[in-house]
Length: 370
Image (cartoon, rainbow, N blue to C red):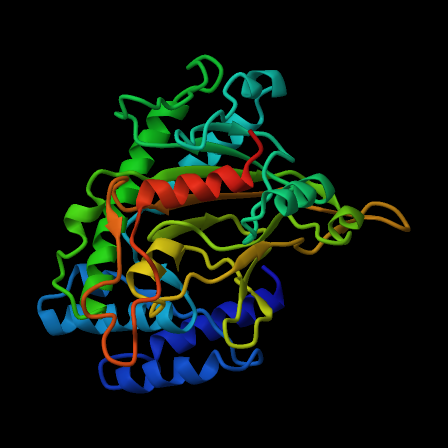
């Protein structure tokens, strides 16, 4: 662990630890102040165990306010004491690494085929995440600077139309059972976090329960192979280009390599989201931003090169990186329109109503070559 990493981690935890019941309002106010400068920008660490073990509505509301304030000001939060045991996460990382280590021809048999399914293997160069919706512009970006990563996409197993694409058990032992169990674990956490969001938005705690219960989510396993620094320095190139996510929330599990950067919404500059062991990075997606009428932020983020290793007098290579993103979505048929308490005099509703399926399939159709 580097000295810089230790200092940043210590600073994050000290700031998070200072926000007990007495200092709650000072914490909320200082976050709004801190994020307006790149020098003081931070993604807050929130102890989610306090929400799950709360014995009163007031205790729940305290944590809910911390989370929603982070989502208003930054769009991101580090969630600690989230309830997913570290050995579980470690095992999923190991099974993910085993999948990507399979021969290319084996993975290609499981290739992603249709944005309506959003299941299967996406080889390096096939995707270019971006905020653009112009097909020609995206095609040009993909040709010039495709994302330097490969992914495996997994959806709910019981879908009767679109099936997950699994390797044979002999090719990758226990991969299927591990990922299905993790999918359910992540959904369960998402449901509780959305209860905190509801409280923080002055809604009934169970407001979102019947709008997310169909588990229309996507578990994305990501592998970023080692890559020469020279390639990542080329114009427009990144391990994953600047983008926002599409659904309600994203639960991101990082290894310790680093590279994730979050855009400061106030200065438009990107800031490192340093991995903090034991935490999950949670961020707002586009549909939750639309639901809240832009009260909550779906913030741009990207993956860039972490510190590289010198391989010659003129070249360096970045290390391999792994992550797992659980893209939480509303029910596929859910109608996403402005929440009743998020608009009114002086704050008109900004977006037309849209179904989850229409929005997400549209965005996937734009960014992945098929």
